[in-house]
Image 1: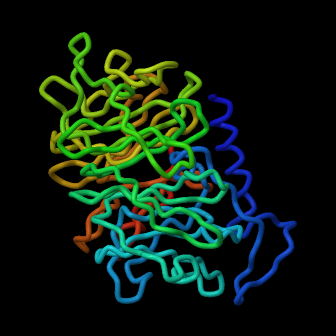
Image 2 (image 1 turned 90 degrees about the horizontal axis):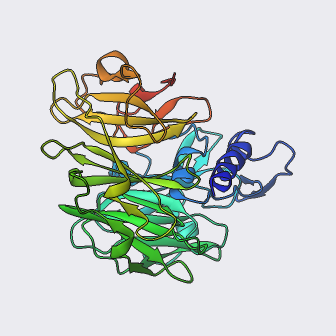
Length: 381
């Protein structure tokens, strides 16, 4: 399983190594003035599609959709137009979905949503996070949209040459989502946050567009005195040296507990349990306030945890050895050194990715002024 995951990651890197327009040997055709190359492949899980894509154009400006304000964390990337380069899915604050294409001639993102939606519904929800994965196994990227409040979680699924809004019937107060095939049946499953409650795992059914709640796949009862974080609001499924994936939950530290928890996947149910969990050490910012987990990466046998102070909004990146809970000496960087926001008052980006140039870079929409630019060119050790 481990070799499959890393093969996917390596294959995605290989695809993008020739740049955003596919292979240098591809013949070019044009549709309405757009160059079309061989479509990029889709990674096996949401982590691969987010962090192994090698994409460098991660910033989507606040005016990318005329007259709309975008939800920063709703952005996700994939070759939605099947043209050999990455395009963008993003949601506006008035709960409408958009697909943007990269126009090389003007170096801008442009709205081309009508091409993929047609007359279909573009209504979304109170969007909090979007992930890319191939849920219906047609080799095209789909979008799973995490929704907060009383809205059901949504999938915008590829169908023919367009996308169709699909209600998953999953009712959770969502904030983050992650997707991978956990039970080995070839169908993607999803792990979802459920605000003010424990996360949930939903098994993908035949066809990949309906899901069944699996209470027995994640056991969160105390084990040997181990305490989960409270108010868990981030979930990640990452490649692990054990040959599978690890589940990482992030929240606020309980009294005596740890705010970041790593669970190794078991070969049989329960796939994840507190009895097989490690608690990452608490990370403090310069004001001695516990930071919130915002994003995480796996690179060169290390975990990189991006945290944000609850009191100052400063960003800090710390590295851990894989399957270990002891951090490497000192943070990789802190906000006061490398990510200090300008005086614009727009705050720091909350999600990042590792790009093909070897840097950590912001992964958000609605970038205004220096919100995203401040995160460029951060090199891990």
